[in-house]
Image (cartoon, rainbow, N blue to C red; front, side, top):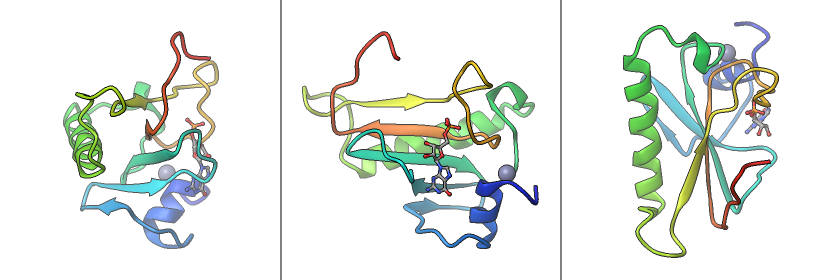
Length: 116
Ligand code: 5GP
Ligand code: ZN
């Protein structure tokens, strides 16, 4: 998608530092972090949102990358100061602002429930 910021990052048109990258997915730091560590896990292929995933294998790809990166940060959720939150904002009411599927991996603080 020519006007998609995450496609531009994937292609290198917008330079970015990759925390992780393989042939299907890449991980970058969020421009506007909402936690001490705030990463975005993004499939390279343009898919608009979670509601548009037609190939279930894509979930395996993005979730595997997310937990791999979480483990690489030393996060396993077993200790009091060691959990994380995965968020997928979807659509307007879900708070999605970039129309290219991405997972937020947030860590480094306590997260409230219910979410805001
Ligand atoms: P959403 O609101 O769609 O769930 O999340 C989009 C996220 O992308 C936001 O947290 C926003 O800060 C982040 N973002 C938007 N543009 C860029 C960018 O050019 N680079 C990076 N690293 N993050 C971006
Ligand atoms: Zn895109």
